[in-house]
Every structure is written in structure tokens, then in C-alpha cells.
Image 1 (cartoon, rainbow, N blue to C red):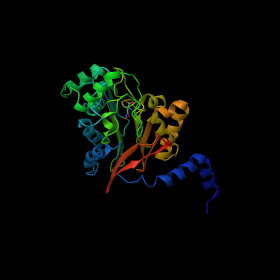
Image 2: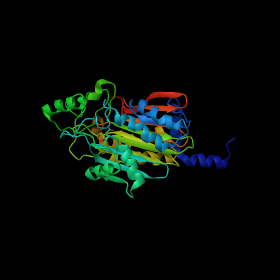
Image 3: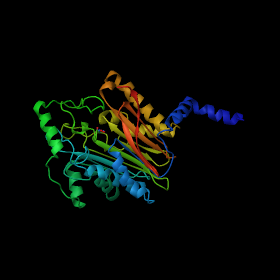
Image 4: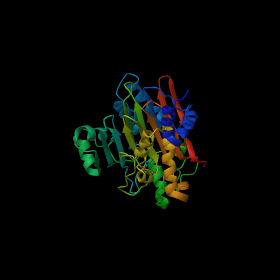
Length: 342
Ligand code: SD4
């Protein structure tokens, strides 16, 4: 029987807890509540999770896992992350990345050129400098000083093809593509609409066997963007946030709008108030949609989160967002729920 004290405590949680209960039930198909566990955005996450799992499955640290995991995606010339990705409108690939561990240590690089593994440079910024963020030429100089090779500037064949197409009209329409719709971001189909990969970012969050959390996020940003444009992915609190007492969250989609609501931090704060990962991601999406009004139809944003119990959840504005999940005996792609049907 429920006593008065318990009743008052439960009531005090209010409607958020009731909503959360419903969401938890709905979530059971896609959340595991096991550790170690790693989740990452989009289908490219399947391969990235495998690399992360080598570390997590062997009892390694979540921080090492989230770095090694997204490095697979950064190295893939066929993918939409790293030096093989679409260039900016001047024809140069510029990369953004950040990483965060269980102690609130964080590192970030933005507008970084000709370096294959921005996530590894972000980790060096975190571990070897008193700073959080380095950008542009300074970030590149730091990377070289740390022994990272300076790569060439030749675009990958896919990116060259996409850029040549884009140049025909050179229309500046900086909007991230929405899955299941033609790429609204540019006048050409993205190289990644081939179906193999469909986005230009990977965000990954993980919990290790000790129950510690870490996260990473790396991107080439928007294809054919203005030179110098930086999105949410290297911004701690926007593209990624980790609070080892609460959970970890990463974002993907239209970076400008994720920054507007400091998206990943917002999700963590909602989880701190008791919401499940999916409910927290949904609330952040709802906030964004409210702010954007009718324009919300034109953008895609998705959040992906993991709480301290190992429960995972995600939510997007539009359908089409999926995330890869790996834990002991489980490897799958989970389709996220969305606010808007199309
Ligand atoms: C950005 N958030 O640069 C990134 C892009 C992205 O899938 O996530 N694309 O705005």
C-alpha cells in the first residue's frame, strides 16, 4: 500500500513523471538498460559502434571507446564525415568535432582543415591544453605539432561529383537535408542519398562497465556552407553534453537550431528532472518546434541520449532518424520517433 509520505513524494514529481512513465513503456523496444552500451547517430553508427565495442567489451573506458568509434567514420572516404565529405562552397572540406568525458573534461576543434581525425585532435586539446576549443589555422597548427599528418586537399570522388553539380547553380540554401524528402539543402542530391549513409555527422555516447559516461561528435557540417561556418557539433552543450551523474546526449541536424536551445545540455537537464532519455529528447524537439513555428517543417534536428541506468532514447522533428545501438549480444539500428510525420 502506498503511504502518505510516498504519495506526496510521487505527487511532487508531477505530470512530468506520469508522462515519463508512459514514455518508458513505449521505449522498451529500443532501450536496453544494460552496460556497457554505446549508441551513435545514423546507420554509419553500426560500424563505428563495432570499434567502440572492442574497447567497451574488454572493460575499457567510455572515453577511449567514443574516440575510436567515430574515427572509423572519419576515416571512411565513402562517408559523410571526415575528409571524404562534401566541401564548403569554396571547395574546401572543413571539419568540426568535440569530445567530453565523465569528469566534465572537454575538448573541441572547429573549422579544421586537412586533418584526418578531428576527434583525436579534440581529445588532445582536452588533455594537453588548458583550453576547450581551438579553431581554424590555430587548430591545424596544434594538430601538426601533436604529430597529426597534414593531408592533401583533393576532394573524394563522391564529394567532387556533388560539388561540381552544386557549382552549376551555386545556390546558397543552407539547410540540412531531411530524410525521405529530396535534399532541400542543395539543388543536387547528396552523395549520401545513395542509401549507404545519409548524413554528415556522427555523434556517439557510451557507458562503460564501470558506469562512466563519455561522448564524441564529429562532422563536416553542412555541404556547400559559407566558408568559416561552424555548426553545433563542436559546441559543448549544443552538439554534445555529458554529465556523469545524469546521462549523455548528442545532436544531429540543423546545427544553428541546436545551438539556439543549447540542445544536448537541455536534454541532460530534462533528464536530471526525471524524464527518460526519449521523453527528454522529445521535450527539446518540442521546444525547438515551438520556437521555429512554421519553419520547423523545413529543418531536421534529432537528439540521442543515454541515461545513467543505460537506458537509451531519441527523438527527431521529422521521421527518418535512426541510431545504432550496441551492447552485449545486441547490435541494431533503432528508428527514432518524430514529432512531424513527414
Ligand atoms: C551541423 N549538426 O554542422 C551538423 C550537421 C548534421 O547530420 O548533424 N548533419 O550543423
